[in-house]
Image (cartoon, rainbow, N blue to C red; front, side, top):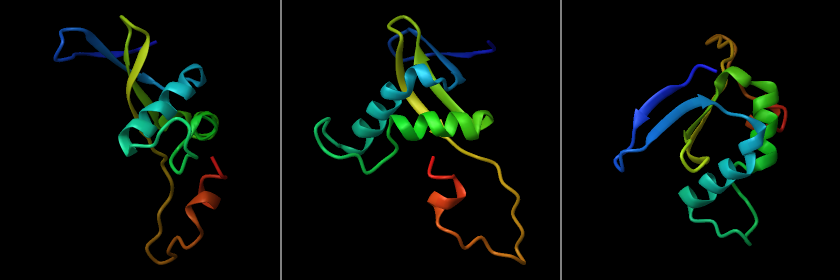
Length: 101
């Protein structure tokens, strides 16, 4: 696996790698922390199932920052590429566009 390594402020190496389903729950925890959502609150952000579906549907656009010393996800990114035609605006709901992923 090609991984780009960065050095974190604490001196550990952080790897930027494609997201994998094995880390979906940790990716959800990153979302919860970023938006201040407690573990016992319903999720109104990307959850583990969303991350799994994104990886399935759009594998080229999902990355995570992993601290391999502790096997911990410390950052995520989620994206997708799509055709865009200015003469035909994209008007469907986002959830439809991503197939509820």
